[in-house]
Length: 178
Image 1 (cartoon, one colour):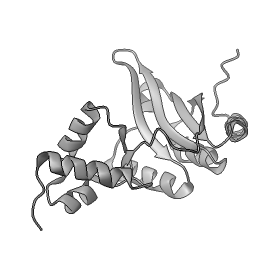
Image 2 (image 1 turned 90 degrees about the vertical axis):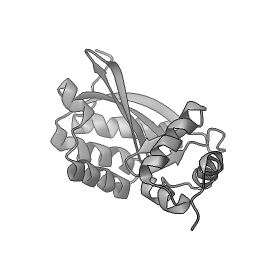
Image 3 (image 1 turned 45 degrees about the vertical axis):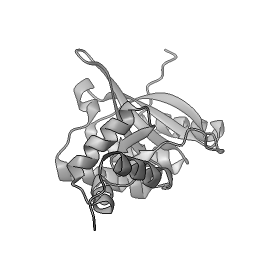
Image 4 (image 1 turned 30 degrees about the vertical axis):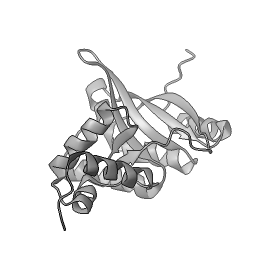
């Protein structure tokens, strides 16, 4: 297979990402274009600099189709729990039909730090947790004694309400009305 160069490769990467509903790993993209994963990382950075809506998730790269017909309802929720409760928290949310888009903390030095999660079901939660364990990575919430914010999305406001209620019942939701 011939190596695909520069702009031609970036155009191909966009086509691949736009046509996939699932995240694609850097390794998979590298294999499809016959370059290293590091070249793909650079290409994705260039594409993001051109305002292409590509996000890096724990499962791979995803093109965010902003004009999708099924517009999602979105909400921000504040949460607090120990690192050991992360998997349970994510499962509670996805079991309500919610996608957990990201996690955000307010760092005393760096300000807002946000990381993409993009999990919508228990299989994706399991993959996310396995990657955390495999890479020995820490959770952003460990920098803020467990306090963090999630952007959640669902097909309806009702699903978001149910997710909030389930989080409150589990004791993970911070009540902002106090």
